[in-house]
Image (cartoon, rainbow, N blue to C red; front, side, top):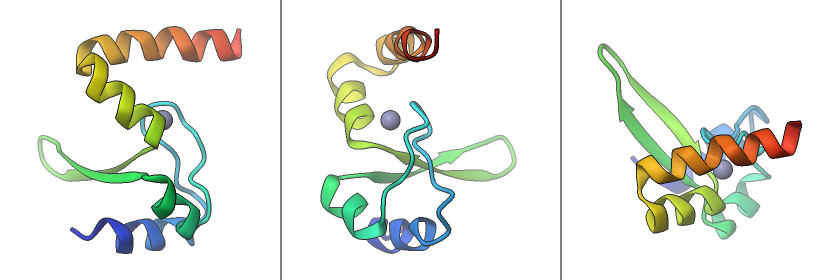
Length: 81
Ligand SMILES: [Zn+2]
């Protein structure tokens, strides 16, 4: 899948959000320049396309999936509580 094309397609709907932190997807060109990623997650029956913002991409790479998800729930709580 072409990330740029996918970001453009999703970006024009105005409905894209980061799968992890719920950050709103900016305009397509901003998202592409900013390093947003589009990833395919294989589900049990269908594959899902998810968006990942640059911040989450970097943190997931640094911390590893498990630690990242643990930090993420703390961060979301701090932001909303
Ligand atoms: Zn994010």
